[in-house]
Length: 593
Image (cartoon, rainbow, N blue to C red; front, side, top):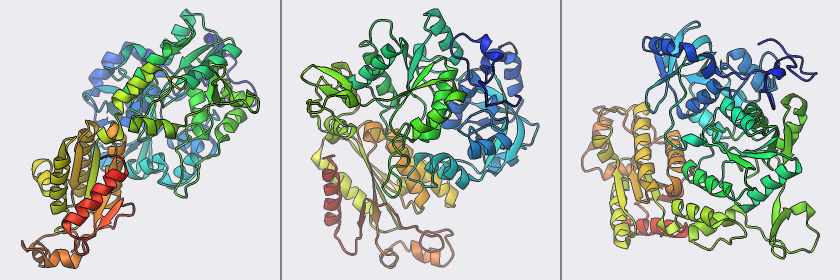
């Protein structure tokens, strides 16, 4: 790609190739179409190449890279593009692009696959092991991930989900290089609602839609959203594209299957022919202002001419000091700043309020003072869903509420995970067994007990006691717990889990994968080491002291005290019945019993 003079309307020659809004950079980088005639060749070559199995986020990124959703990118960013994007929101050639799109790998992978500039690597789908693309490596580089966190997300604060992901999940090296596409990832859900940018542009052209207002969301939609989008479209004599994210969103969000059923229900409420629903396989970063610019570029690539930018658009919530990561209008201001280069019209999100006297929604800033209005906040909606309290039809539609209630039952019907962590012989196993008995007596849900030794024997027999193996064991427990709690079970897990990062990763797994059951409580069984050792009838600590057992927690391997325990107990200060009662009270306080 050649350098661009950003002081003028960019890419004047390329624009003529596209009806409607041209793609960002002037050319839709549809690698699937470009490489269609050599795809079989590439597939055969992929069988002979070393390969990388993508993570879920890398898979989302790859799908939008090879379809053209991330135009003008043609692959994962090399070091020059990466540094320029982090520092200046631009690719090395000057084109506006605010988000690093990188392929991270470990030193172990680099060594095992002999990755070097010029190497060709097959990239595989983690779900079915199919080869999706081949990357020709341009460079391998070690990023400054602290700087990336500060520049892209505003702070190196693990309260930000993408900073936590960067710290805990992203490997230390990135590889850059252009891609050749073999095939798109195969989807089995909502296939008719999945469009590539070229397909959606073709759809708009077929319907003669010249102006399209795109609406980004990762949440369920209700009447106010319908009124907002209809109003935006009518004011601009345009149509509406409901373009929700169905890749990775914020941990704890409503699951994609539930949300899509909600979107399908609400599309029936739009005037005939006004709206279109299409799903976007994006891995969100929750990067606020930068993310808003990124979202605008993506929607431009999909053919939209207008884009609704919300208040605190793609904000992750509160930081570690309890303050919002971004200002309420930072995103709108940054999109406005780059308006001339984006070439997509921003539509500011208007707060809509319900007026009972006229049974209609109006923008809050247009309602005369003194007129009665009604609103339900997101917090209040979640409370009503959890408790089963009624949700009025002026706020949402019956079909939407029915779908949400099916997927998110009242709090006392939801699953939960009680994660007991402590030293060997701290009493956590006895507490876990007593808890299981007590909860089974109460009834209402299945209760599963995952003791550390049992899990090691049944699921992790091949693992040792290195830090890496202990982490793997903890994550397997978290995976099983998330699957069970999503189905409404109560799970009591009682591993030693000595490391803070492993425990936090377990919490994240349950929150992100547990659906309505994503209720995670970390309980530190803080029985002192001296007492654990004194009461050790099996003599395990004694063997560790003699050097017969290596890497034993509390002897020659550390136990990191939990920083975010929901409850701390100690068998030297409390009896087992007292501890069990305190945990039952914790569940009752959170509405789960």
